[in-house]
Structure formats: C-alpha cells, structure tokens
Image (cartoon, rainbow over all chains, first blue to last red):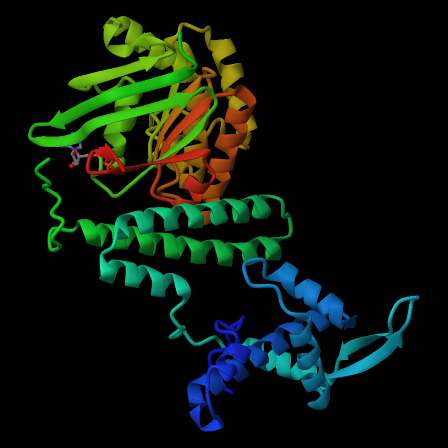
Length: 218
Length: 220
Ligand SMILES: Nc1ncnc2c1ncn2[C@@H]1O[C@H](COP(=O)(O)OP(=O)(O)O)[C@@H](O)[C@H]1O
Ligand SMILES: [Mg+2]
C-alpha cells in the first residue's frame, strides 16, 4: 500500500476509537486508516522478527518490547490477532506445536511470500507524516491558550521529560548491541524534540510580541 | 567551614548596560555534576566564567571551599584556577603550534613540573580518554571529537576538583559528543571532580545530577 504511513505503534487505541463512535457510518476513512495501518505495521515488525527464525507468540511479543523500548508494550492479544491474519494471508505458517509441560504453544515461521512482503515493506520509505497530535501537544497548547500558569506547566513538563530521558540514557548505556542503541536513540530524539518544543514554547511566552515583555520593570 | 564546594550569593554582572547576571545564588557540592541550561543570552557563560574566577562580578559573593574569591590576590586566584579548576570550551582552544601531548602537558609546565614528568602524566591522561594515539599530532590534524578529547585531557591533567565546561560537545555530532561526554564523566568519577557544564543539549543535561535553568540573568 504505497504512500500510506505505517506507524510502528497505534497512536490512539483502535478499540477506543471504535467504541467512541455511535454507528458504523461514523467511521471516517481516517479512523479506518489508523486502525488498519497500525495492525499492518505490527505485522511487518513480527515478520521482521520471524526472519531470524521461527518463534511462538510470546517470544514475538517479548522481542517487540525489547526492540522498541520507547513504545508501549505490545498486548499479547494483538500479537495473536496479527499472527492469525498473517497465517490466513499465507505470510507465516505453523512450524510446529510444542508442549513442554505447560500449555501448548504454536511456533510460527516465515513463508516465502512473507519474506517477499517484508522485503517490499523495507524497500519503501515511510511517509513523513502528518502524525496525530499527541496528549502532550493537546495539553500544552491548551495550557498556553488558557494562559493559566503556562510557565509552571512547561517547567513541570520539562522535569518529567528529563527524568524519562535520564532513564532511556541509562538503558542505552547498559546496551552494547548497536541496533538496540539505535532503537533507544529514536525514543531519545523524540523526547529531545518534545523538550526543544517545550523550550520554544517557553521562549514564545517571553518574546517581545507577547504581553510578557522581557524588559520586566521589577 | 562549608559542605559546599562552590557557593554563589546574589551575583550580579553587567557588560555596559546589559545585565548578564541579575542576582544569581547557587551551591555546588564536591563531585556534583551540574548542567546549566537556558536560552542563548540568558547568562550561562557569564555565570560559568564567574564561578571559575575568570570574570569578576560587580556584586554578590562567590566562595570556593569556604574562601571568597574576591578576597584572594590575583596571584592566588591564578594559582587556584591552575590547580583546582579545569576549563573546557566549545572549541578546545588548543595551541595550534603544539602537539596534543604538549598541549595537555602545558598546565603542568606552568606549574613548574619537569618536562619529562609532565609529558608522562599528559600521555597517561590522553590514554585514559582513548586518545593515546593522538599524542604527537597537532590540533589542525584532529577531528572535532579528537580535539575535544585532547582539551578534556588538558583540563583533567592537574586533577582539578572542578571542571568548568562551556558547550563542550556543542560542535560535535551525536555519537562523537556522547563519547566525549561519557569520557569526561568517567574521568571525573575516578578523580571525584565536580563538573559544571553549560549545555543546550537536553541529552547532556539529562546525564547531569542536577539542572539549573537560566532565564534573563536569573535562575528560572
Ligand atoms: N563580552 C561581552 N560584552 C558585552 N556583552 C556581553 C559580553 N558577553 C556576554 N554579553 C551579553 O550578556 C548576556 C549574557 O551572555 P552570555 O553569558 O554569553 O549568555 P549565554 O551563554 O547564556 O548565551 C547577553 O545579552 C550577551 O549579549
Ligand atoms: Mg554561552
């Protein structure tokens, strides 16, 4: 599906989106796109994991969470649903069913068309957005618009972001694998972009064009 | 008597009519890693240079290890800066005519170390910063990251108790900047030196123990 943005994680819970609409007619194209796209993208990540060898659902979930430490953990149900669809579409197949004392586990393997699908996906670059506004943007812009102590809001938000940045950098220092470090870089750079945006917002509050002139007479 | 290594009280500094510092108070403990952040022109560099005894504020007090900097004679201040403080700026400020090891040995030579021992200590620091192979190279032939390592070695060579750094990774790319920073933090951890660092890089700030944000000449 060329030109579609395949976001690595669903920005809005698809279930919540579906529940928030009253009837099927209310589903806009964009709602569908968000849901479908998010699933497609997770499927491709799963194909990517399977390209290094067969695995069962829980392994896939765990590997996803390790690979994307900045993202929300993948619910097992989503992995299971994605595997069902991938199997239906012939992109993965059941390699074996094992039972080592515990419950039965299905081990999946990449098929030839699964490999081809993965190659096609990786061969086309991601679209550059637009991405949906996240909670940070919603809250900060609301704080700036209402003007209620926007400066303290920005300062508190900076602390939270810096604390998270600190955690990510500590995790990165503890990682020797280059791909793992690169995955953390992605989360780090996004936090950094948010931090710089918060700084710019603070700067806008202090800019001469606003009522808070910097030549404060105190 | 104080448990603070550096203590600033109501420090003010102006350049002509520009008030760069408008009453800044700040305490820094031994071994602490402090990041000074804030928009450009907010007074970060002026604060750093004042704390390092390089600029003299017009008002307020700055104490180091319980002694007020403005009570010291010029000779005492110079000795303090050479022995207790290490300074690194955005561009390493290496002497272009000297090799890396000569640059690093310079502060020791100024303290009248014999050339052979200064050279040996300098090489040791270059090695600790993964720059041993650069010892005999002149600054013009070093990459930005390499030059900053040499500048760090020079700042560390006298085993200072405080390292003052103004945007030390500002001119480096992500990976080179991170390597220089980690090298600095590791070295400081070993020697117990405090680090006072001006930075506009949030990742650098996040690696510090504490952040002080400047805004219009005051701490925000
Ligand atoms: N040598 C100087 N002469 C005149 N004004 C200066 C000088 N150095 C700094 N300033 C002014 O003092 C203010 C603070 O500067 P500085 O401490 O360099 O800020 P920062 O490091 O946060 O960018 C700025 O308005 C700057 O223009
Ligand atoms: Mg500056």
